[in-house]
Image 1 (cartoon, rainbow, N blue to C red):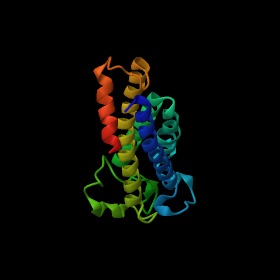
Image 2: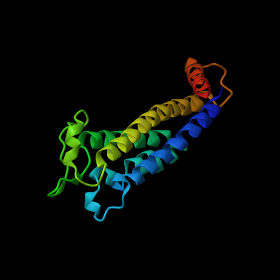
Image 3: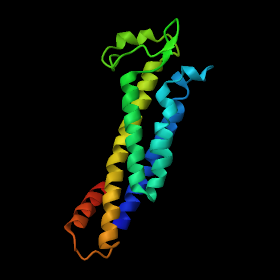
Image 4: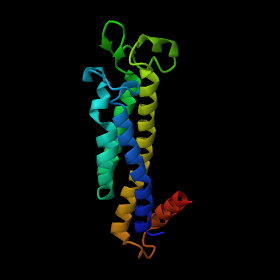
Length: 180
């Protein structure tokens, strides 16, 4: 497989991931699936637009700039990891706050009741930020392959590589494996 074919393969994989990350970030603006009456009730990391900017808009530019896509996916990954560690912003009967510390809610579901509203905010945030974390991790790997593939295509030429560098055969084998 030539580097152009690998780029097509990666692009077809990255585009749905970018759309799903954008959708997940948009859904996070509706805590528990409900429209909030006050924007201050939305988890701060949602406003960092990790899924929209990092794994969405910047990922689409990866078709031209794979390195920018790699940075965007990395940004989404970091924001999602921070959000998972911090936990959701929720109403704790007397105020809107972050009731959890250092991911303590991840292994102790009994403290999820600290959040009185929105209903089911903990599993909502946990699910969507976990999806963002996983998808952006996949995007990091694919964009790294895309960067290497682009460099090889530049050095060896697209589809006309005479075997001048063994790396192109390695990238071809990786892309062939992805196509299976």
